[in-house]
Image 1 (tube, one colour):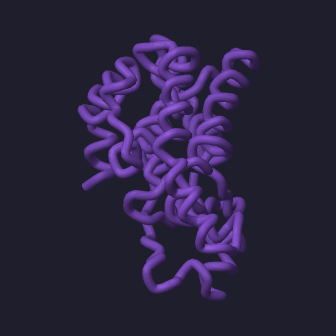
Image 2 (cartoon, helix red, strand yellow; image 1 turned 120 degrees about the vertical axis):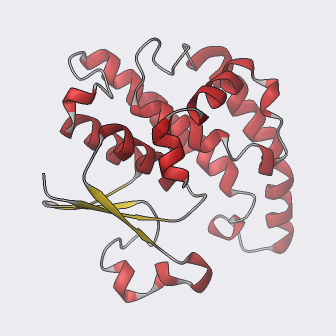
Length: 204
């Protein structure tokens, strides 16, 4: 494979894809997108990702976006690393279901804290959404801890790209006013993830 290029922002959901790239031993480079200066809204970046968001992964076949797709792509293009149950269609779909929940529900819950303008126009609405974040994030992680995280990894004994994604969003809990200790399995998962060389490299 040709060298890939990951467009990312520190502290954002793009960390999940970066961890997966490290786990895969992929040949890639990173490009930081400066959200503070609005770089994501400028023509140069919109030509790469018209959505104006991260992550975006430039490959030899074109640019891919959305963590759910990027994580699956990394696992599928590096099969020897065993980062997804590629030989079991049902298990792969279960992994994708987990990742889709993180993307469509958990991430959206978190975004209500600082990006309420995506859903409303009134300042009072922004404040209301922000107040709701600790409740919705806690409810999501309660469900994950109780019903979705098999343990010790998301899918059980096999580490997968879903673990990269869960770890990334778990890191947001403290800032959202939620104590991760409320969720024993998630807290244990976070501790073990923090010890992995891929995570240390991605955060360096």
